[in-house]
Length: 582
Image (cartoon, rainbow, N blue to C red; front, side):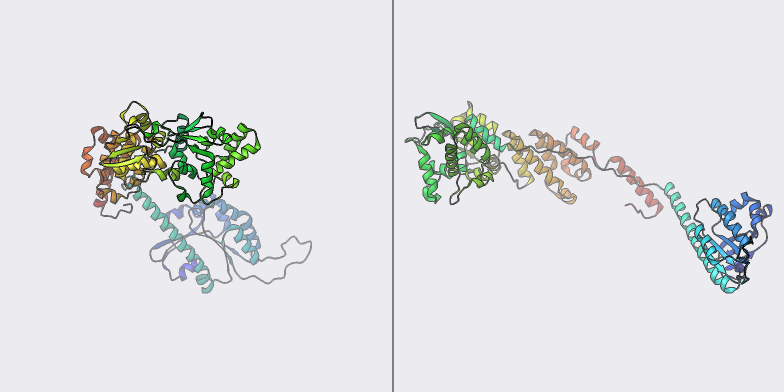
C-alpha cells in the first residue's frame, strides 16, 4: 500500500503522521492521501495479525466502516496462511455481517524451490509454500479477488495491484454518490409540496335490460282470443277454435291463399294450393263487408276443416304456430298422446308440414327437427308492418294514415288491449286518432310491436320513442331507449360533449317528467362527472335547487381537489421549477 501511494500518478498528497484518533488506538498504521483530485483516501494498515487480534472491538469497527479490504500473505509462509484461513477470515466475515464490501487477497512473493521432506514419520507439512490453487480457493470461499504479486515493482504494484484497487475505488465512489443522491431526493421529496391526488369519479348507475317476452305475448293471444277474426269449425258445424289471420298468414302460404292475401299465381307451387283446398273451406258470405262503424274483427270469418282427424288436433297445431313454429318435438308428443295411432299421427304431421311449406321447397322431418321451418319471429310479422293487407284499424296522425292489426297491438301492448276491448270509442271504430307524438315516432313504436326491435337514428329520436313507450306503458321499449341514450352519451368524446347543441339538462327534465327514473338518475351522475364541461353551459342554470345540490355534492373533480391544485400550481410557479406530474 505504501509503495502504491508513493508511486501512483493519481495520488496528489500523502500524510503518514498519526492522527489523534490513531494515537488513542495504535492497532493500525494510518496513511492519508488525496486521490482523483479531491477524494480523501484513508488507509489503516495492520502489519501483524496478532496486533489485529489484541483489540477486537477497535478492529471490528474499522472493518465495519471500510469501503475496501486488502488481505496479504506471504506465499512462503504456510503457517501464517493457515492461521489466516482458519481464524482471521471467519472473523472478518463476521465483522462484515453480509455487507457487500470488495475484498482483495494478495499473495506476495516468489515461491522457493526447496525439496520437501519425504519422511513418512515427519509431522511437518510436506511443502512450505502456499500454492496458487490454495489461494484461489480461499478467495472463492470469501468472495474476494485473488492477486499474485511476485515482486513489488512498478508492474505488479502500479499496473496489476493498483489497477484492481483503483477499479474498486471508482465503484465505491459511484455507490456513495448514488446513495447520497437518493438521500438528497428523499429529503427534497419529504419537504416538497406534493401534487394533489385526483380520485376516480363515482361509478355510474348500471342500467339492466329487460328480457324479451315477444313469443309469450303472441302465445297468450291464442288463449285470450281477443280480436279474433277467424273461427275454425268442424264439418258438423261445431266451433273448434278461434284464431287471427295475421298470425296464421305470417307463417303459412296456405292461409295466405285461404284469406286472399296471395293468389295462386303468386305462389307458383301447386302442392300448397292442393293443401288449402283439401283441408279448409271458407263458408259463403264470410267475406261480406261489415256494417259501418263496426270493426271487421267483430265478425270472425268461418272456416270449415274438412279433415276430421286434423280438426281434432287443430288446437295443438295452433298452439305450435303461435309459439313460434319451432317446437316440433313437442307437437309430435302432443299429437301422439291425443290420437294414440301412429298412422293418424303421421298423417296429421304431414299435413302440418304442408301448411308450413315454403314455396318450391320440400320440408323433411330433418328440416323440422333442425328448426328450419319458418318461425313466427320478427321477420314474419314484419311482412304486415305498415301495410293495409288484413289491417283492421287505421291510425290517423299528423294528417297521415297508418294501417295496423288489432291482434298484434292487443298482444304486445296492454294499453291498446284495454283500448280495443273496453268501453272506449276506439273499440268500435276503425279510424283511431293519435296525438302527442310524430308520425315517424309512432311508426318506430309500431315497428317495435311487430318486430321486437328498434333502431333510433339519434338521441333525440330515442327520447321521443321513450316518451311514446311511456305513453303506452311498453316498459321494455322504454328500457331499450334508455340504454341507447346512455350508450351514445358514454361514447361521446369530451370535446364533442362540450361543443354539442344537444341539451343534456333538457333530456334530464323529459326523463323525470315521463317517469324514466333510471335515465334521470344516470343523467344527473353524468352531469356531475363532467362538471367542468356542463358548468360552463347556459343550460346548467336550468337545474333545480335539488338537482344542483346533487351535482355539487357528486361533482368530479371535486372543489377540494381544484383548490389543492391551485395551491400546488402557485407553489410550482414560486419555485420556478418544472412540474414532472402535470
